[in-house]
Amino acid sequence: MVKKFNLILQEKIDLADNTQHFRFAVDAEEPLTYKAGHFISLHIEKDGKEHRRNYSIANAPSNDNVIEMAMSYVPNGMASTLLYNLQPGETLQASGPYGQFTLKDPVPPKRYILIGTGTGITPYRAMLPELEDILKNTQTQVVILQGVRTAQDLLYSGDFVEFAAKSGNASFKACYSREFPAQAQGYELSGYVQNHLQDLNIDPEGDIAYLCGNPNMVDDAFVKLQELGLDRKRIRREKYLSSK
Ligand SMILES: Cc1cc2nc3c(=O)[nH]c(=O)nc-3n(C[C@H](O)[C@H](O)[C@H](O)COP(=O)(O)OP(=O)(O)OC[C@H]3O[C@@H](n4cnc5c(N)ncnc54)[C@H](O)[C@@H]3O)c2cc1C
Image (cartoon, rainbow, N blue to C red; front, top):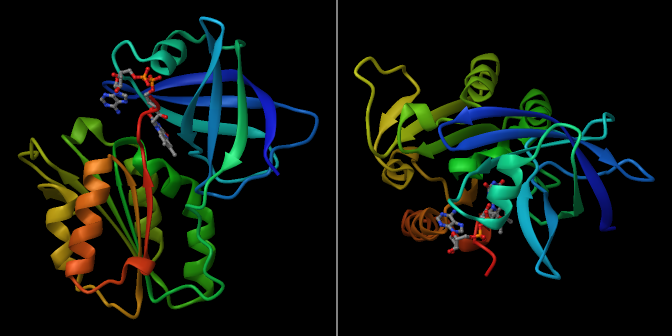
């Protein structure tokens, strides 16, 4: 059931040039329960009206009653300005959880392909413990592709590199659309994430793909995956459309 609650900022960290990580304590009568992949809505009062902005939850469900998220700053954006200036101890109104972008297969597929650009990678960070359980108990493989402009724009890459290193059946790749480092690591690739889909050897019966973030990437990858043989029913999407 959807609930309204307050979020009290505990900590704010710079993740990349224009992206910050937020950790909030949930102030509600009951602990907030959600699934990895859900998002929350911030309720913002401005000019006598209530506006809503959505943010994916970046941490796995736990008993801590804490919500983490990453916000990419949009110049002069309503929520961006509010969050950018928010100080520890200050409170926001929110509701949730919302969404269908969760791991929901009673029998996990042969492979999950999880693709995100920018802050669209955050739902997969929340999914890591659930994915670890799946990897431990099944033959399922996991491929995570993160699309960013440069290595400096990577978000939570340490978590994904560590996850892939300790789980034999998982891999993580970072795809850079602009600058490629002179001394690249094995997980770093050049070009848009969409350009690497053909290298995945799509299995139409065994793969399930998740696409999250920039709407152009989501649309492009949706078309490409279908061209590679994956049925649209096996492709799940979360587009970070701006509210207007
Ligand atoms: C399901 C869902 C989950 C989302 N999760 C996240 C998340 O985890 N992290 C996150 O940072 N965002 C996320 N978003 C986007 C977020 O909800 C806001 O749209 C975004 O933060 C901009 O809000 P704002 O109020 O700062 O800007 P607004 O006041 O809405 O916009 C200001 C101006 O900037 C333009 N604009 C809006 N967004 C962008 C953009 N991304 N790039 C360029 N111009 C833009 C608008 O068209 C407008 O002209 C999500 C969106 C959805 C639908």
